[in-house]
Image (cartoon, rainbow, N blue to C red; front, side, top):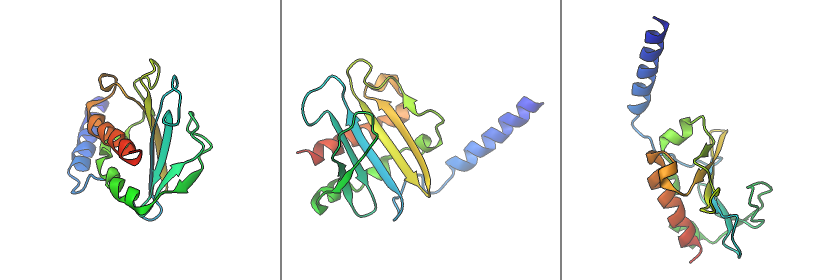
Length: 156
């Protein structure tokens, strides 16, 4: 009986959550999205790139730390911000509800990984995502493509 009650409660919760009128993430004044990629067996400036997106500014981390710690951001120009400002719209709502913080095995086979940190209403969630799509949930694919595309746009 307890299992049935738990399943019913879970179903109602999922149904209620999925019926939300707006599943996209909007960046408000105090919210942010940090995104980037990291490659361990790599040489050059593009091995570790991390950015912070707020409601009106895009920042680049100037420390390029592989572990994603000790971030030190400097503001980029508005034209660059305009190219990536919609990235938060691609954050899958499922990601915010995940209990996992690592998806796949990021950079274990020198394939690289994505670093993501989301601050929404004071709640911070961070994760690392394998670049091999067959190692991660399908709901991340579009977001991964967008993150990689935005990083490429910033660096062209």
